[in-house]
Length: 188
Image 1 (spheres, rainbow, N blue to C red):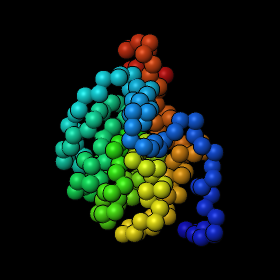
Image 2: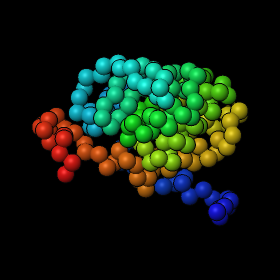
Image 3: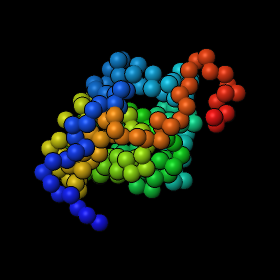
Image 4: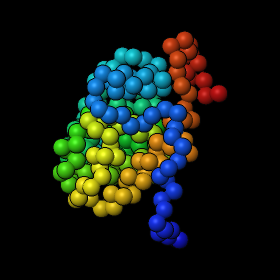
């Protein structure tokens, strides 16, 4: 193992991805952007709350498709969860829409640590992560105390929204409203 502990972090400053990954504030425009992302990969504008399992423990998500899970921050990071939950979610879905992140919740060390675990796991497994927060997520995380290596998390978030970051969601078929249902089963 070779450590590159230089002053420059090359994950910052990359060219932005065509599709934004982080949204603020929590308003109608953000909701519409998240819906467009969900529809792009799942083909349905119908959002039905669904109970899903993470490491054998249930929680309610806003919607779940074949490629994307749409869940509230409160259910995934404010609630008592472990890294095993996030490992399981990363195995089940290619991407996560993490909605309704509130800056006030990030000041709690346990909640902040859960978010860091989630980012680390989704980053390591090359999963897509879309975040909607009440203020830009980089701003909300900057200067917080109570978590180990928050600078690494900020660096990973920067990389995840760059054009260079390749995630497994990019490899799934995008669905349009005129895609025939039988074409979705065709792996070609």
